[in-house]
Amino acid sequence: MRLGPDRLDLLEFRHLLGRAGRADSPEQEAALLHKAVALWRGAACSDVASEILHQDVAVLEEERRRAVERRMLKACGGRQVLCLP
Image 1 (cartoon, rainbow, N blue to C red):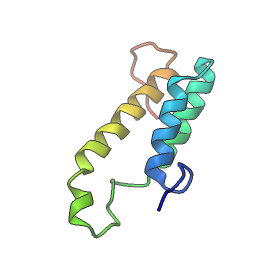
Image 2: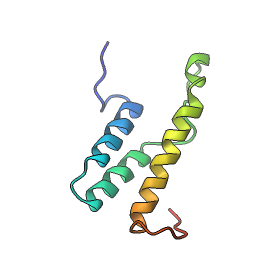
Image 3: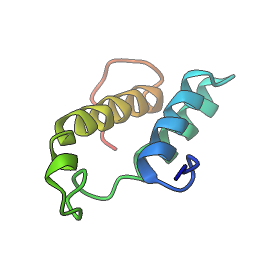
């Protein structure tokens, strides 16, 4: 079975991150990062009963953390200042 990026949150998240990296403007990049981060609702796989999936949670959480940092930097105009979401 094949799923498109819009059928699974993780695939959509990664798809949006890729598009953000190729964005034509800082505003477009910020909007795509915002959409990607907005897909997260709590901890990764918290509602999934699978030992195999839970082995990769740390990697997924790190991807999310990096996306949040990128989004916050865009929101701050690239300046390294304290910026709350």
